[in-house]
Amino acid sequence: MGCGNVFYTLIITFSVALITYNILISANAPLKQELPGPSRTSIVDPIIKMPVERSRRYGSTAKKRLFHTAVTASDSVYNTWQCRVMYYWFKKFKKGPNSDMGGFTRILHSGKPDKYMDEIPTFIAQPLPAGMDQGYIVLNRPWAFVQWLEKADIKEDYILMSEPDHIIVKPIPNLSKDGLGAAFPFFYIEPKKYESVLRKYFPAEKGPITNIDPIGNSPVIVGKESLKKIAPTWMNVSLAMKKDPETDKAFGWVLEMYAYAVSSALHGVGNILYKDFMIQPPWDTEIGNKFIIHYTYGCDYDLKGRLTYGKIGEWRFDKRSFDTVAPPRNLPLPPPGVAQSVVTLVKMVNEATSNIPNWGS
Image (cartoon, rainbow, N blue to C red):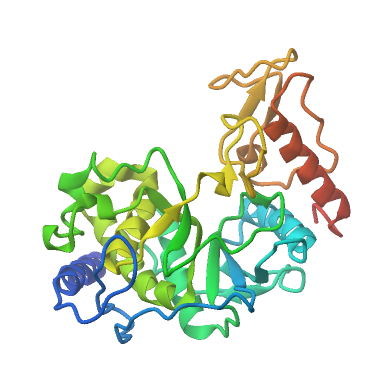
């Protein structure tokens, strides 16, 4: 048994080392053609060998530029109830005014079907080999996208990468244009601050570190052909970053977000930074012109409607309260004075759970 464990460890170490080598070799490969965007470079992908070619201009003024919404998820109760709520609101707004919303896929990276296959359009992806995620389950996300993009018949020319804890609040147009993706800028993604770390993956000859946009992989609307090139590199860079102690310590839980930003820049795909893409309650208090509510943070208030962040409130909504059981129907609404964004979030969750058949089963 001991010899087997040593052999397995050596295999994993060698595999990740080879992946890292491939990234660096690919990143320094001779440039042949360009994609539009801030970083004018592109690379041959180290996993799926695809020709490096200029992205074509998608659509025209006479044709809708539809995008396919893709959400990766595990088969946990936690991810599943969020996906069901998310898909409910997707369907409500898909055919609304100014919508470029096309199809929808839940990319389920559990490797096996679940009982919601008939409710939500689903693609089954295989998880990473046991142990390769090193306890960081998010690494399954880029790997799941690689499989989906390689095997699925995706009709639309664009992809919206979304997440289970997103609620669409109005019809979404295709915000990308001219070969650029459209992405939400995160204040905590700071390429300049971590330049010394990022240069391991984005060599100086690729251009200034500002070519790496302050984004994650979601929400992002990007051309399908561009994403087919980015996704395998995103997977490789994620694995290499997780393997490197300095990078892992620097980026922590947002490591895979940095990996996507780096990979997009390596392929020369720049992004329009679109702050109105989404809000994140409780810090963002108004819906305004936003398209998505991202309920990643807990919302805690006293009964006078005052935020008590960092302390469990007398009233609260936190998705983590429902990690092993779905939220019940008719959650209590916040007390008077609570931000509009939080009130809207709870009302939208309640509407979805009231109308989704067999909720809680």
